[in-house]
Amino acid sequence: MSLVVVGSIALDTLETPLGRATDVLGGAASYFAIAASFFAPVRMVGIVGEDFPRHELDWFGSRGIDLAGVEVRPGRSLRWTGRYHEDMNMRDTLAFEANVFEAFAPELPEAYRDAPFVFLANIAPALQARVLEQMRAPRLVGADTMNLWIETTRDELHGLLRRVPLLMLNDEEARLLSGERNMVRAARRILALGPESVMIKRGEYGVLYFSGETVFAVPAYPLEEVFDPTGAGDSFAGGVMGYLARSGDLSPAGLRRAIVYGSVLASFAVEAFGLDRLRRLGRDEIERRYRQFVSLTAFEVP
Ligand code: AMP
Image 1 (cartoon, rainbow, N blue to C red):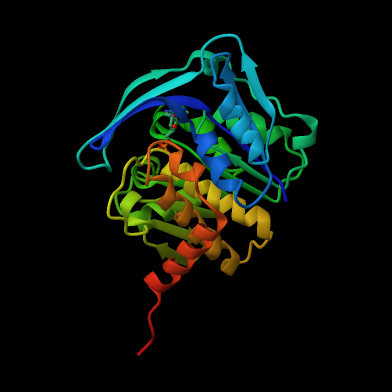
Image 2 (image 1 turned 90 degrees about the vertical axis):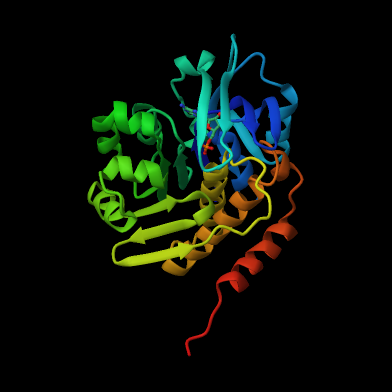
């Protein structure tokens, strides 16, 4: 089943303690779409400038990603520069040039509007709502957000959350949105805002899922070296939504499997700069690591 994603498509300059990369493919929608493309046909909505490398658009196309909803505008593409600290859970945004992204007003091609799955990656809540309004009857709507929108457009975000069944955000954003430091209390507050379920991404500490009285926790895959955490959350979301779109199974067990697939995709994404690891990733590696997750967390009741 097809999956629509809307969000940023960018050229990133990244500095981590292990190196630097300039103007590499990035943006939340890019990470999401590539991760999801291992499972299901993806339809992308976004905007890029004329300077956007043709070969990257071709790569999306070769992964079965529909680009009919990606507008190419005169001007420069969105550029973001981020620097990670020695502790790679911390990063600073050194530069954010919106460029053509400033004028982004998502318009969905007719063929996208019946898609059963949709993910609203991190963009202004008003734009996320605009996309949602154009969808006819999605089976599952997922969304992400960030500090900027929680701080500057809280009312719009609250309005959106009443219409989003699945929210994914990181621990810092969960604290800011809920006003609670403790993740269990934060999740309870967030669920009271509207979503049926929330997935809280905690970087190297894994992910927590809350829905009604259910709590599910998955660790991050233990890696000896993390090269670049950029896009880990978006790759996680792509793995989750992609797997759900492929299986169509929204049962509690299906959701748990999806969260593990999301964790698998995120663990690969951080193994190299930008999207480089996902470029050479194979389905067999995904399945192998999924099984490693099973043995990582399996134990017996005495
Ligand atoms: P993450 O590591 O999940 O926070 O995602 C990082 C990606 O988000 C990078 O590839 C950036 O290009 C993109 N990004 C950074 N800031 C913004 C923003 N304000 N709006 C949309 N996308 C952004």
